[in-house]
Amino acid sequence: MKHRIYTGFVANPRSASARGGIHDGANTTRAQMEYFPDGAIVVTETGRIDFAGTRNDALSSYPAAEVREYPNALIIPGLVDTHVHLPQYEAAAIGTGELLDWLNTYIFPLEARFADDSYAREQSRRFFADALSLGTTTMSVYCSSQRNATERAFEAAFEAGIRVCMGKTMMDFGAPENILFSAHQNIEDSLAIAKAWHGSDDGRLQYTLTPRFAGSCSRELLRLTGDAARANSLRIQTHLSENPSELRYIAELFPEFSSYTDVYAAHGILTGQTVMAHSIYLSAQERSLLREHDCALSHCPCSNRFLQSGVMALRKSMREGFKIGLGSDVAGGFSLSMLNEAKEAAESSKTWNILNRGEETPPVNAEEALWLATLGGAEALGLEQNIGNFVRGKEADFVVLSLKDILPNHSSFSAPEQVISRAVYGAGRGAVLTTFVRGKQVFTRS
Ligand code: GUN
Ligand code: ZN
Image 1 (spheres, helix red, strand yellow):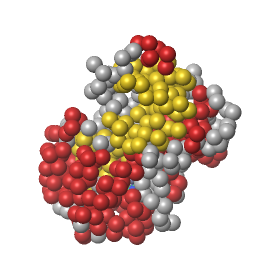
Image 2 (cartoon, rainbow, N blue to C red; image 1 turned 60 degrees about the vertical axis):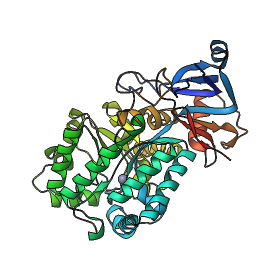
Image 3 (tube, helix red, strand yellow; image 1 turned 90 degrees about the vertical axis):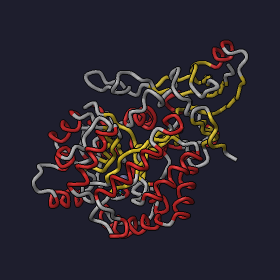
């Protein structure tokens, strides 16, 4: 069988226990990465990882392989965005208000435009092309609320070669009429799209039931979502505990429940395949409820600041053993780059420390943040058996970053963790040389 060898500085997140590489109990273990500065990965003809290690070992063990040399480049697993809104991409960096006003002013009118098929197709193509150019190989996507636009998004993802878990955003109240559908229509349309796309291309494209949040889903829609998830073994993604005014709004809408998380629990939304975005203001009772159900968290630090929502206690959630990935939350977050999000995760962990002296110590560093943006994201989406690091048999999703394009490029700080830190903090647009999904080249810098 024909193998390909890709040489460069290989950074490989370690899978430790099921709960990921980061354990920070009595013994503080920092990021769990292994490094091969003069390294290589070997990919099979069918797009799977066969080997990760030193360049010399790869060359001697696979003498017949085709070799692609990437000198002065960093090879990392494909970046995983666990929470992002496709129809909001055009509004990245726009607006100044907080969540609820921002949704009404900028986002709902933009999402309404996706009723137009050709606009939906064009926007979907641009969105996935840009994500791949930034090294993102897997995305958990909220489409707009229209069935046709969600179908255009699946077609675009199929063509782009990206890996997605994706769904039609479901809403039956709390937004303009033109983007609302009845509870039954929402579920019927979602399941029809899931039937057509879930698991297609050998599981590269998957369907996720996507109730927007309790502020735009009736009790009936939430309950039908929980039922449909269980009956069809589908993932669920939604927003939880993001912004103080949102919390007040949810409490007014659902006075009979003791917490925001309780609202979801009572309607069957908490499952081992549920991804909760934000989750900033959780009580101890809510945190244990989420852990009991094995829900994952999508931490969205860039958005949390852009919309002035708050600062999440990342270290605390990691210590408690949550599955955690990072989410760009475009356009709450202003960038599709998951390296940017990793930087924001590290910086926001320091902000928590500043505000709550000592509680978050030690702050999450760049290596850990990169771990969260790769293997952590894969775990959060339940894809850790397939992707997230370079383990034999996993699918070869990876990114080659030019170290020459990471500023300052003359830096003499070249210990492995310093290279990672410089990549997380200094890789701007254009640092990605090439992106692969399942061993197939899906982006090349021109
Ligand atoms: N809560 C409900 N809808 C949204 C959204 O589109 N973005 C963010 N950040 N939070 C939300
Ligand atoms: Zn969001």
